[in-house]
Image (cartoon, rainbow, N blue to C red; front, side):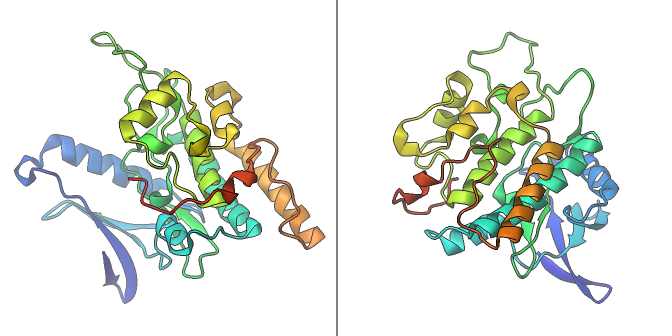
Length: 278
């Protein structure tokens, strides 16, 4: 929702629980965690926090990003792809935001195009929605969180867990989500298109592979193991260097994408309709 605050346009996120009468401890604690984390953020690629309110409605006020979400932008240009250099610039912005979060001990846990907001000219992106974000603890995280199509395999359970048992993971779950977002930026295709969420979860927790028709890059599959995934500071450095080389060579189409992600751009020639991945 867009409104004006002190003569400037702002964005207002309202939290509406499914049962308004049950807005007690659980909802307020979750809301307070999000406000606390967002209020601590101070980075050019993280949406700026302005204020918050608990009564009469829980809401968070942030700067207004007039370019809407990255998800809507990709849908608007589909089936065309973004120019490679444009995609890499946006990918670098996202990597910088995530590098900042991880340097401050924060795991976002819900990195996806609908939580990435664009500037009006669509050239810059900022990270938003810290509803699932948490501080990383030494013992590891245990609560399953995220959106199926962008969730790392270690967040799923192949078999039912014993009563009281929990899954353990760390900040590398964000790197896996980033690899899916990067794949979307380079191909403008919906991840695991046509697959039910439960099928995506099952495949990821077992072997992480689908038929060739799914056109998911091998880079995403090879990054299943957390230890195989780079840190965001490495990704940021690599993309910065790559874009510098792009500028020096004054070319956008002949530059090879980062080896660390090994995106196979040939899959983008497959003819698919662009639909909401759900």
